[in-house]
Image 1 (cartoon, helix red, strand yellow):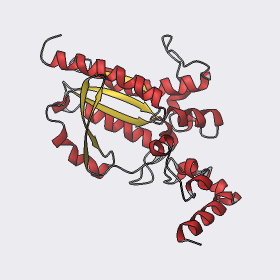
Image 2 (image 1 turned 135 degrees about the vertical axis):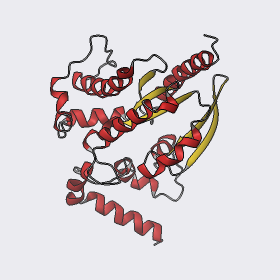
Image 3 (image 1 turned 135 degrees about the horizontal axis):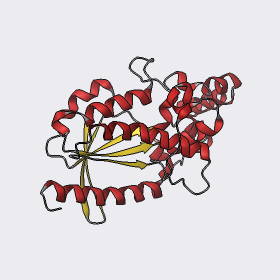
Image 4 (image 1 turned 90 degrees about the vertical axis):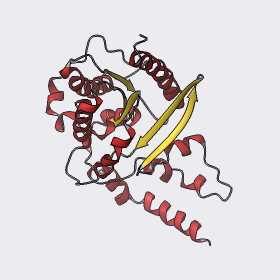
Length: 255
C-alpha cells in the first residue's frame, strides 16, 4: 500500500469518527480551512489514481496569500490589472506599494466569519477585524479619492450558518437584534428571510462606515458574492467592469 493510500484511509477513518464530527461542529472556535468538509467528503474520488481535479475542486482550494501577486486578465475586452495582497496583519505593511495609481480597491470580506476569530490572536472577531480594516482603508488620507468595490463573500456559507441556527449573529453583534431590513432590499429568488436579513445587516455595517465621511470623493459599491459560484462571479465582474470604466473616466474628468 502506498503512503498516499495509507494517508487517505486514515483520513477517511478520522472523518467517520463521531468525536471528530462533533469537533468539526465547533470549528468556529479554532482555525480550520473552509474547504475541509468539501474535500473530506470526497476522499474516495480524490484518492483515485486517475483523479483529476474538477473546476469546483480547484475553486475550493485555499492557500493563505503571502506577499503580493499580480494578475492580468480580460473581461469583455476590458483589461484588468489586479494585485492580490494578504489580509493578515503581518501582510498589511506590504500594501502601500500597490496603492500608487490604482483605479479601485476590491475589498473581500468573508460574511460567514461573524462567529469566528482571527488567526493571529484567537480572540478578535474576524468580521469585526474586517470592519476595522475597511474603516482604516476608507479613512486613509492617501486613499480619499479611491473608491472601493466591496465583495461580501461566502454567501453560501453564511446562509448555511444562519439556517442551522447554532451560531446567532446577535450573540456576536448585539445590534443585530434591532436591525430591520431596508425596504429597497431585494432578496434572491426563494431566499429565506433570515438569510436576507443577515446579509443586508453585514452590508449595512460596511456602508455605515463608507457614508460617515460623506465627502463624495470616493464611493463604496457592495456586491454579494460566492467565489465558488462561477455564474455569480461572472455577473459581479461584469458589474465591476462597468464600475471601473466609470471610475477611470471620472479620474480623468471625462465623466
